[in-house]
Length: 190
Image 1 (tube, rainbow, N blue to C red):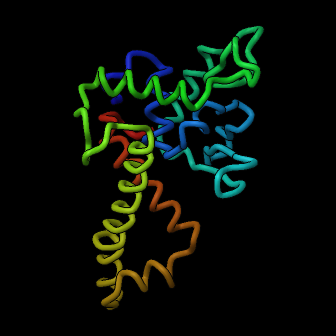
Image 2: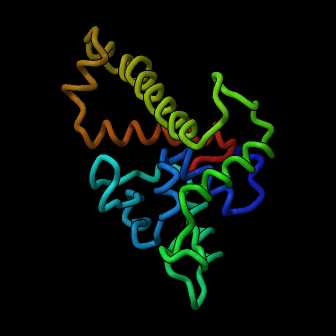
């Protein structure tokens, strides 16, 4: 999908769906006010989501969102990353995001069905969760296991859960996830 993206709008679409794991409606309504890009922990802040308020770490793709902002900013810009001059909301709809995804999937020559289903944006979200969970597994099984063995422990999960702070676990997860996403998008991590 990323290779088939022809412009920054399409690249941001792929990064937001596959690299951040956002829902179509969340992508459509992304607003610059939600972005926290300059405090060392880039993220998107949500006042409300399907499962309540929260934030999504921008582990990968900050450069794409910054480029998109420079492209859409003008005197009339309303702050949405996917603005719509015709919509009363000021932004595109989830349906438009799904249509753009379909066009991109066709251009990328994705199979007509994946696992018996037509490719849809939710599969991009599934991709994110799959990569994230496999990253955590690999991190514990390979990287933390070495630390555990050096300390005479037979359980990497004990080291992971009991001896690393939540901050350090988050830092390691993000570092390894960034590498996975860079590989998936075939670029250098940023």
